[in-house]
Length: 391
Image (cartoon, rainbow, N blue to C red; front, side):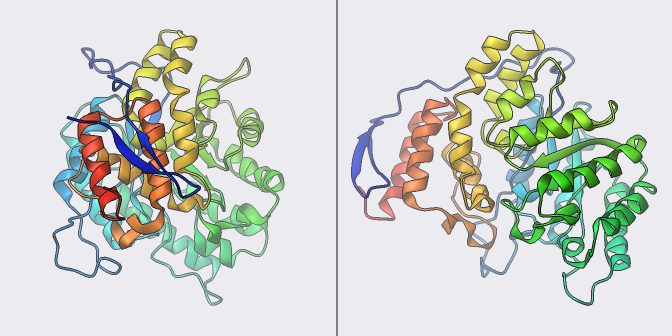
């Protein structure tokens, strides 16, 4: 098949491009499963049913077979799955009712595999933020979602709460909520600090718009409840802030990087520690993540960086501002790679990025060697280009 195509550039011109890099092949699954020296979760996207007769901006129709098949693919590569998180469009197309369905389907699949590592987002997104919402309302909302996840037999990722960000008057309100919730959970949870670049409604989380002051409150809460906290994921897109917090945590508490700009260096770590991973970009670059982590487990740091470093420019592009639209790039790459037959998303979010953005994504995916089948990817890219008049 002819791989050459014409891609638009940011300046409005169109240039010929041919993908030239052979796809990266992840190592075969060894007997007993992959043995990494980092815990690595991929926050996974959902596949919609593009043939459903609905109003796509309003209705939720999910292709469960393809959605769960993608989780099976991630498990096969040795990655854990962070389920019903923002990568699955939680709060941007997937409401709590849909999240409950997703959790039930994913947990059913996980029960059938001895190697399935999975944890589920529990938050307060069924509680509409507002002036009349109290701290007690927030606590009850958290308790409801945690009860559902635990009732399914799942582990909890404690998501940041828009309602709490609106209702809290001071850091003391965060302390009250998290102390209460952590005192009740059955198993240690992962706490998720999602920065305002991912969700503007979470600005000022932990009681301060200054990240370093907010970090003091968050770290105090976590260390005070260390027995109930497996780890904390921070998504601030700042390696420096993550390292500072990592060094302040109780030694029993893991740092899970959520930094889709600097993950390679943070996972590699330094002489004072390292981060584990809970990343949306690992959905898109799963083979590279698996291969790199295998090399890291063999103490081959050079090979780790050689594999993972080319994915970083791709990730920075996918997660560029407005960062909350990164899901569009993740799903687009899943379409190019044949994990779904269409480029459609919940809430019509496939329209959130420009054709220039998607074209640069294609170039960077080739450089990162994460186009699984370059012929298929080229054909599908041409299909998308035809919709904007580029033949």
